[in-house]
Length: 282
Image (cartoon, rainbow, N blue to C red; front, side, top):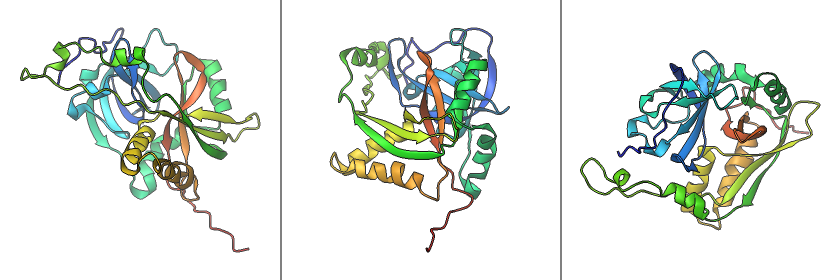
């Protein structure tokens, strides 16, 4: 696989961390790194950590981790990002470990994640004011609806230029043959949840969802069912199934560097409910 001369490097004091990946966002065009993915997870010491940038599609095949994989990597605190969880990563250092499955009603996943659940977005905002906390997980009190908004069908010329800035050298593999570089697919919709936190201060939130899982669902179901029917399948999972009495839907949330006071949904966590609510007969 070709290695870009613009691959992310690391500065400052580095260390090795073992991290359970819980968030993998959909890639974004980057002027410096062509396209990048923001990844977040939980260290083996029980702390949230953000890893950015990761040129995910340029990683070696055996480095392309899934959500809920343990990975080992060399990281360092980002000096220009004051959010406490933000770290740089050496992509070449990534070693993929065990995958944490969903056995026994997601018992192992819940044992790691449940201690980190915050009461509300409002509580996380309080934490941000105290120590620049910018990642968390919440269990909404009420999820009102899933919103699907149309966006631009194609990348802007500036975004497309970022994605196509690989040099000819980058497009030559080890055998000296030209490698086809696939443009990152533009997702022409924005997916949002409207919800209320279990907090007296909460007046309701509408957050965009940027998880790779959600975007891949759109891509797969649009391919399988076409423009006329993908939305019904999408809503069946993300608006009906995950909000039913059998799932305990949580949101992994975080801020972005450019807008540190604005929170969004980076990933979904939906273990089965430990007690299923039975419908009333009366």
